[in-house]
Each structure stands twice: as structure tokens, then as C-alpha cells.
Length: 484
Ligand SMILES: NC(=O)c1ccc[n+]([C@@H]2O[C@H](COP(=O)([O-])OP(=O)(O)OC[C@H]3O[C@@H](n4cnc5c(N)ncnc54)[C@H](O)[C@@H]3O)[C@@H](O)[C@H]2O)c1
Ligand SMILES: N[C@@H](CC=O)C(=O)O
Image (cartoon, rainbow, N blue to C red; front, side, top):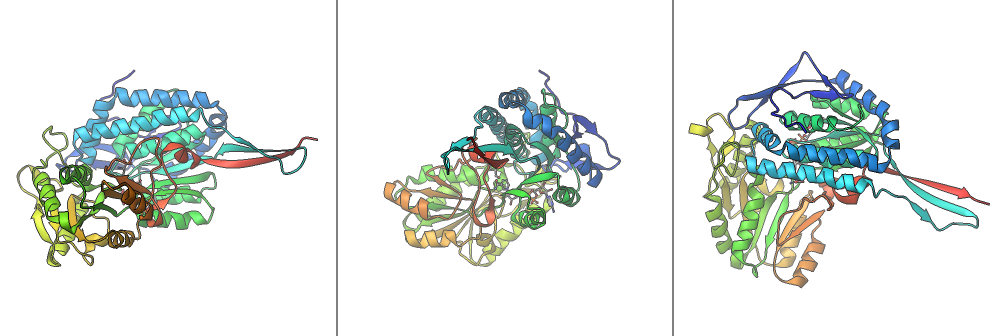
């Protein structure tokens, strides 16, 4: 098996072939502003060509035996794991996260491929009780068809495989558009997929103008499914555009996750869990904690335990082994975080640590922001309403269970919520009352291949992960047969 260095290899892929373009996209390291690589930049023409290839490949791929599709996925997972170190380095350079975190993401990416390879073999149908004598009712699961997959920059490896693997397992063929900030890791993963026994045209990748490519795929009748991960604003726009042709849609969108800490906990363990989650990927995580609600009697203790941990986080370039947190993805993200902190402080929040753009020395050319903790946060501050998507831990106080449930549910988002308590009855009551798609109880890890990942309300439609993620790429067909 080949080990790649990923130098000057990035490309768009259609029908198993590299694509060229007169226009190029320069991919920049957010830690240094240095160029990492150039990739071809596509538009309408390349997007159409990709659909043509996926459409032509669909009959053969969808008719393959499930275990044959599984073989390809197994080979892909092995290729990813075989190349994990160079993939993690590439991911860190274009996205900014520390290499150790990037390695973790590559393993998650491979685990989804492996899991869906296994699940592909279990795809079955159903025979239902007859409605009249001599009748047989059979329900088949059929692949939706050509699926268009659009992915974000924050987890640019795992979000690609979490879509591609179930789509291929179901028998769909795919066209993929990664975020322009992080096309290299997507191109590398698709190259590894193409290096398996995958028939040409089953997986196609177009890097380029998001609006043009999105419009082309939404207007093409041959594309039957859109699976999108990204911001709620773009998700809503795709839903509007998809309505014309009744496209099947899966939307994994933004969140505004509360972490509720009751007063019966061990504050050291809770502070560890909260800081791990909040500062992963520089706070750029859809299920990242956005608001920390501390019950008043433990608030001061928790504030201090969180502050002391956050003050020690080493910030630096992701490829530097000492770094525990990298830069934000770009200048706009850095400015947005600065705005949220300034707004909160102006409205009365207390800065416990951080609170500044890092702009000198080794940080001068990157988009760094210091790990920040704010206390005394109250509703009315902009960061209580919106997803901050940065390294800021805002702490609020609450008195009673009913009050904190009501305040947590006030958001239009509903992706993830976290709850810390040792009271079993309270765990049941509160986790059932919180209006979110995923609840972490006494822990903050939510992403596993077998578990459904996704939100309610404006956090999206549908689920990724587990058998639910496979169902997103399947249609039901009922066959009602009279046998005599
Ligand atoms: N729920 C989840 O599973 C999940 C996972 C990761 C990220 N997210 C969310 O993603 C957001 C961050 O990602 P982002 O900034 O890359 O989001 P984004 O919406 O700006 O972009 C996401 C993708 O959509 C593309 N895009 C942008 N405009 C488009 C258009 N008009 N038509 C078609 N495609 C278009 C982008 O190029 C990118 O590939 C956050 O809100 C985060 O919470 C959600
Ligand atoms: N952490 C999430 C991605 C959200 O941004 C995951 O691993 O699925």
C-alpha cells in the first residue's frame, strides 16, 4: 500500500481522473499565512461533469452485492489508517488544529468508513403481514441515487467520510464539494478512495465556487439527495432551493450548546470535561459548549477551576508539538470572537483570563486568539444568542432546575446539550426536558460511528452515524403482490 507525502498532489477528481483548471485556489496555513498548496478551482462546468460521471456509474454500483461495496470501504479505511501521519500533518497545516487532534480526527474518519463497510452487509428489507388473503407486502431499501455532499472546514476529514461512507454503503454514487478553506484533506481522502477497487465515477470531488456548484447540483434532476454540514444560514438557503425538486435533504447545522453543572458534582472532573470540549479545535466545533450554566453554590469554585486550566493552554502552530490549541480559521473568525468578548465585557461580564487577539512574535501572521474565560455572563450579551465558534468559555449562574431548563431551551438551535450531576432522577428529568438532538451526561464525547449525530430545530434535519445515517441515503419501496 502506498504511503503518500501529499505534496502537490491535490486535485479535483471526476470519473477517477484528476481535473485541471486555468483557475487555481491558494490554500493558506491559518497559523502563518503561508501558502500550503494550490488546487484547481472549478465551477458550473466541472460540477455538471461530476454529476454526469456519478449518474453513469450509478446502475453498476447500486447493483453490486453489499459485501462487494463493503470490500471497497474496508480497503479505503485501511488506506486512511496507513497514511494517518501524513494526513494528520496535511490537515493541521491547512486547518490549524494541533497534529495530535488532527490524528484523532483521521482515526474518527477511518472509523466511520470501517463501520459503514460492516453495516453495508446488514442492509435488508421487510416482509409485512398481508392486508388480504394471498397478498405479500415486501419493503425494499433502495439507494436514493446520486447524492451531493457539501462539507465544512472545521472537521474537514471526518465530515467527508461520515457522508461518503454511508452513501456508498447504501449504493449511492456521490459528488462532493469540500470547504474552500480546507480542500486538501478532502482531496487526499478521495484520492485514497479512488486508489481502491472503486469503479470510476462512483465518487467525484469538485473544489470551487460554492454558490455556483451548489446551484448546479440543486437544479440537476439527476441529483436526488443533498447532504450538507455547515452554517444554519446556508442550510436554510439550500432547503429553499431544494424545495423546487423535492430533493431529499440532510442538514447538519450550527449549535449553541449549554453545559449545565449542578451543585452535587466533583468540580475538578467537570472542569476537565468542559475545558476539553470547549477548547478542542480552538472552539470551532458544532457541538462545542457555548454557555456554561453553574448552579450558584458551586459557581465560584467552578469559575476558578476552569480559569486555572484555561490559563495553562499552550497556543501555537498546530505542527509544533507543544501546541495544545491552534489558530482560528481566518481573520473574519478572529474578528468575530473579539467582537463577542468585547460586547460581553462592555455589558458587564468579568474577564477571568485571555480576551485578546494574539498578534505579535510567533503569532504575528496567523489568526490566534487567547483562550478566554468570562464570568458574570447574562442574557442580552451577543454570545448568549449566537454560536461563538471560538476559544471563549462564558460562565452564567442559575438557581433552580426548572429555571436552567427554560433558559437552555430558549435558543432556536438544538444540536447538543451537556449535563453534570450525580442524581439519577435528575439525569432522567433534565435530559428528557432539554430540547436538543444529543445530550452528554457527565461527559462531552458525542461522535461515534454507531451513534446518531444531529440536531433539532434550527440545528438541522436528519442524522449522521449509525443505521440512521445509512437510512438518509435510502428510499423505501413497497411491493404489494397478489400471489393467488
Ligand atoms: N451539525 C453538525 O454535524 C456540524 C458539524 C460541523 C460543522 N457544523 C457547523 O458548520 C458551521 C461552520 O462551517 P462553515 O463555516 O464551513 O459553514 P458554511 O455554511 O459557511 O460552509 C459549509 C460548506 O457549504 C459551502 N457553501 C457555502 N455557501 C454555499 C451555497 N450558497 N451553496 C452551496 N454550498 C455553500 C461552503 O463552501 C462549505 O463547503 C458551524 O455553524 C458549525 O456549527 C455543523
Ligand atoms: N465534533 C463533531 C463535528 C462538529 O463540528 C464531530 O466530531 O462530529
